[in-house]
Length: 309
Ligand code: APR
Image (cartoon, rainbow, N blue to C red; front, side):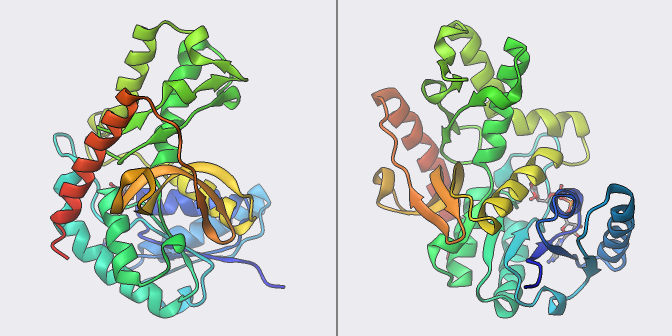
C-alpha cells in the first residue's frame, strides 16, 4: 500500500506553507507545481531536507509540469494572484480566472479521480469555475474559506476571553467576502453559549473583525495576503478527506437548492470525508440570519455572472 499523493498547484506563500503542514503531518507525498522555474523545485527540496530534522516521512518534489501529479488523491489549487492593500478579492477575478481555467484542465487530465480543494480568490467564484471546468461531480470540488473564517473568529474569541482556542466551536455561512455570515448563535465555549460569556456589543465587534480579517492581514503585510491560516485550513480539509474523518466543517460547495440557493458555490456546513462532500447540513436560521445569507449570496451570484461562462 503506497502513500497518498497530494499535489499543490502554486508554490507561493499559501502553496509552499500548505506543503509544509501536509508533509509534517505525514498525510502523504507532496508534489509542488508552479510556472516559475526553480521555485517549486527549490522549496520542495528545502522542505524535504527538513524531514530528517523534524522526523517526518514524506517525499516532496517540485516541478513546472503536471506529469508528477499523475493520480493525485487530493489537489490543492493556490495558483493565482493575491490581493494588495486597497483591493477586494473581486479585483482578482479576471486574472485568476485564466489561471484557474488552465490549471484545472491540466490537473483533471492527469488525476481524473482526485478531490479538488480551491484556495485561489475570489474563492466562491473560482470554486464555481472549477466545478464547471473540471466536469467532476460536485462532491469532489470544494473551496476553502469557512475553516479560515471560523478560525479567525475563534482566535479573536480566545483572545477576548483568554481561553484555549481548542474549546471554541463555531459555524459560519456565506461567501468568502466581507459579507460572510459568522454565527454567534452557533458558537459555544466547551458547550457554554458565547452569549453567556460576552455582551452583544463585544460579540458584534469580533464578528466585524472576522469579516474584515483577510483585509487586516493584507494591510499589515502590504505585499500579499494571509498564508499561514489559509494553508492550515486547506490541509485540515485534506486530512479530513484522506483519513475519512467525516468532519463537520464550513466549506464552499456547489448548491442545488439547499438554503434556497441554486447554481452557486457558497459556504455551508458539510460532512467532509473520503467521498468529499458527504452531506450538506441545513441550519435553522432566524429572519435576520437569513437576510444576511441572502445578501452574501447576491454578492457571490454577481461575481459568478462576471465569469461570463
Ligand atoms: N500555474 C501554476 N502556478 C501559477 C500559475 C499557473 N498558471 N500562475 C501563477 N502561479 C503561481 C505564481 O507563480 C506564484 O508562485 O501561483 C503562486 C501564487 O503565490 P503567491 O503570489 O505567493 O500568492 P499566495 O499568497 O500564495 O496566494 C495565492 O491564494 O489566498 C489566495 O488570494 C490568494 O488568490 C491568491 C492565492
